[in-house]
Image (cartoon, rainbow, N blue to C red):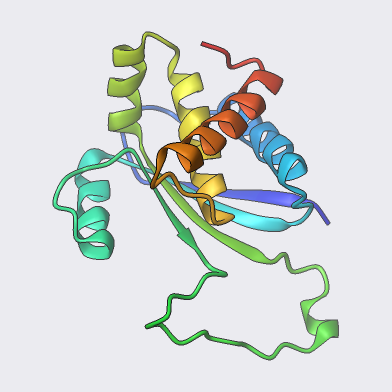
Length: 164
């Protein structure tokens, strides 16, 4: 079994085409290989600024739009009970492990691509690999962890030809 990308489009600002999805699947494969994650499912949703603003306010308590949100399904905070489902091994065969959800604001991705002077594809790729690393537990709360995360992101993006 390999890493699988399941995607959904909930915005009208750009058409999501097969070429973009293929690029994101390649990024997922490369990032998974870099991190030793060979199987699982990542759900990706493309939204607009209004929707990501709602999600950011509801789940993070931050009342503004952001570029990407990640919701890992395998993490549990100290205050949250870990939910364990018992599944018969035979029934679960062929069902990928859910790694989590990544939500990307296409509105912000367009703005940031313009601000940074690179393609929208690079920005979407950057946000996707950034979100994927968050699903795996990476964060950027300090300079060292941010540098580590940025290095991994750039390594994956260069492997798929999305250089600055």
